[in-house]
Image (cartoon, rainbow, N blue to C red; front, side, top):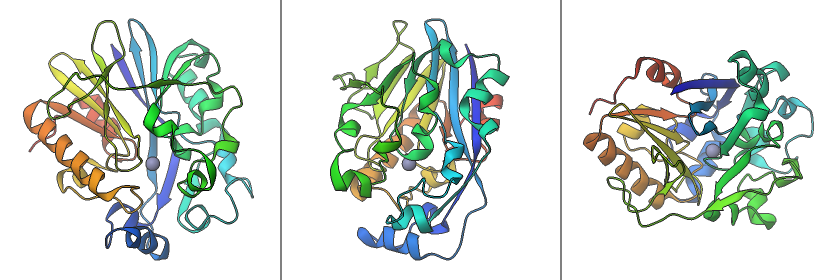
Length: 276
Ligand SMILES: [Zn+2]
């Protein structure tokens, strides 16, 4: 099974979005008011050439975010706290073709959650089955959905996702999971907190777990330090999730792969196991 890191540009966020300050709503306030920016962080999707079909985990960002007015003018987070940096040729369709993968050949697109830098490239995959957790999809509506960063008006009109619910199939400390492949080697697990329905993808290969963590933590280090991010919708659930991930990596040899970790692609290439 060949597995690729697919980078669609970079994004800078406030330092407090990674190393949060305060609790509850103050985490977000402190993030927005923070004057310090992170170095540009990669935006990764992951392409898996699985015998049952090509799987893409997340779709990265769209270069349209650089157009004036792309983000809602009234939204303090989008206006003050995020600086995407990418060109049209950085979008996931170009990046996949450079790897010899035609976007139309992707069978499944799994979205860890529905933030703009994960769903931004979705319009390139009208032929794929789009997989989202039901819990995540239930959060997108109305004013609250917009406030929580779901830019539904930017999503492709054809989007009719397959909404998954977990089964009582425990994997390590995770009490539920959903098995995607017939071979049973690709599973989805609930890792809520960053968003209400956030999921991660576990791929079992050669005795090693590849843990595609989305934004469950922004980096391996932040997971090891058990630090909830500055925009997580649910602080307690995020903390629980980080604890479960840590238990998992203590129990099983795991390559841990968050979407914005500058070292994630290298860890995938070298199959670097988390050391705890
Ligand atoms: Zn996110």
